[in-house]
Length: 138
Image (tube, rainbow, N blue to C red; front, side, top):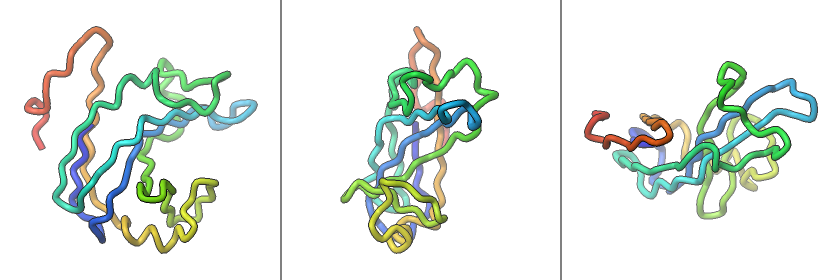
């Protein structure tokens, strides 16, 4: 994944994860998986690259019903999860309730949003090798 931070109200560091949510109406609750946390240490103008590893190794909300990557048509959301890294909490500004929310989430969110970024995710099939970022121009 390459993350290009184009605009942010501050230079505050943050972490991001890619998340996939599947089967919203499933008995027992939906399935969810998130990648490892990727830290962005600078403000606007930063370009950072990382290998998030195989989605099969990502954290799963439900070990009894993990995200099934063979059914992408049943994903109801794919997105980025942004974390404030200094206190490892979620600075949410859209009335989303979560036990990991920052104590002053609305105020904390002002350090990060509105944000403008360009995210490039390259999936490499098992048994193949990533060809390099030079093949994916900014």
